[in-house]
Image (cartoon, rainbow, N blue to C red; front, side, top):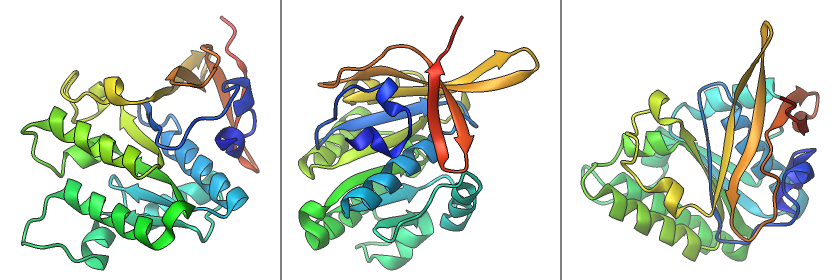
Length: 231
């Protein structure tokens, strides 16, 4: 299953998700959203031989790779990592100020034509970063059509989103939660003089799952899911 990339995910998700699914992974800064999404993509590519893409708009590719190395998350050859500057320099787009949504779609289309059905997974870090690069006019309609294209490409798309109070996305501005097939929440839990991190599946269409919060751990093999949180 797609979830096999992270040890213990079977405690949360009981069956697989389907191609074309769009999953929002959201939470505050420091909740391991990027690491979790990247590890899921990385392990999927390693296991299947498929091709995947991770677009990081919040930081540079080099910075992202340093972070993944600190989490012991491997980077397979078949997982391409690009940041904003890389997209602008490696691909030619018409006009002086091309629309960034069109740019992202153009990059995905290019690799979909090149890799065909082997291009199966996409990570976008983050939705707030994407919003900062596009005009807010008709945002709901534009997000709807962007998500529609991702489904048509038959990709499993994991889109990272900061909780509204930590991002430039106003509450209710977009329609991300309504349009997404799945929502995974990640966040901190205060525990005495420490902070623990958790993952919780809020919704996942066509996939049976637990609704409990589960603790997260970081070890020599990257991120793993532990037992449910006990109140």
